[in-house]
Image (cartoon, rainbow over all chains, first blue to last red; front, side, top):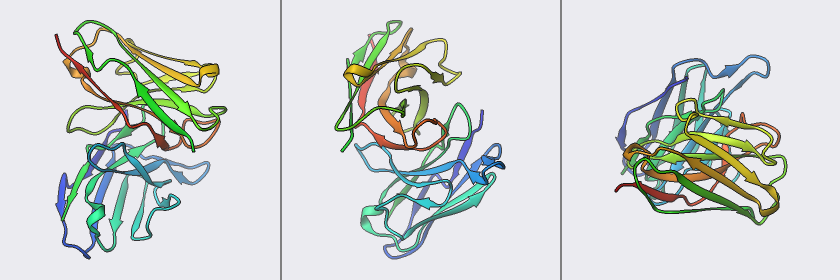
Length: 112
Length: 122
């Protein structure tokens, strides 16, 4: 099974500053035949289900603010929030969907 | 818009079976895969399994495969999860979710229910 590991476990960033979260997969989630990384990022606020932010490693979902960006390929991925807003306080998860079982990281708690 | 709602008992005794229902409203279920995902308190989500909308194909997490059955009733737009021989380790919020792209389960989950908390305790 592919294991997803995030770092750090928690992160405190000042309002307006940049936040960066890392995700590493135990095997590559890049599929050569279509040149895609099977990697998503989710945001979860207390008492709510995860919300899909990013898919295919770097493609922002409709309605997601452009301060959220993501990059990476193969086994190493990054989610960045360019200018932290109060509403961005949440736990962030990466997830691969390269094969079964799909798996999530342990989460990164982002605080002000 | 499409909405998902989980329902079922909030308390299950050890060694018994956990049974949950996911009801889809506001849109079509056709051609999508529908998944069950759980999240133990304070931990990351865990994929349980998925099912094609008509019940013709299922995929399970190997770690749970011997205890899990996911089934479908397309006419009711409902999906079911049964997990047998539960222990305290099965205590979690259980979510149903939709795989974003039709005809494949190799994609992210774009729609989620609000989740239902299930506690395993005597």
